[in-house]
Image (cartoon, rainbow, N blue to C red; front, side, top):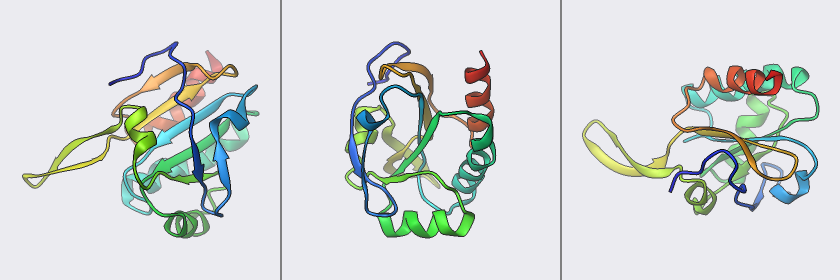
Length: 151
């Protein structure tokens, strides 16, 4: 089920790359970009994460949270390799991805499998979805965020 602008953002509590529990509710009162990516340290996911890292100084108090099915240890390696500097959350059972409507059937080389549809969500200070980008391109995620914040 796809979420839309104005919907309440599904809350969650997941471990980040340091093993610390992060809840969406912890960010009430500030904007949060939640983005879902298929797998840490793959080309598209690296482009996306590094693009977001590079604009952290331009987005004020807006928080960035990356989510993928990777375990915290893999997220930590990804963070350390690229000095990302924002929480990478381990949605290992993909329950949060399902709540956001981004866990879906995909196909590669004719083989069907379940996985993350790369997507991003801008949550407002009250926990509502201000922007929704399903099937976002890795390189467009930072640009979309900057445009939304400037709007």
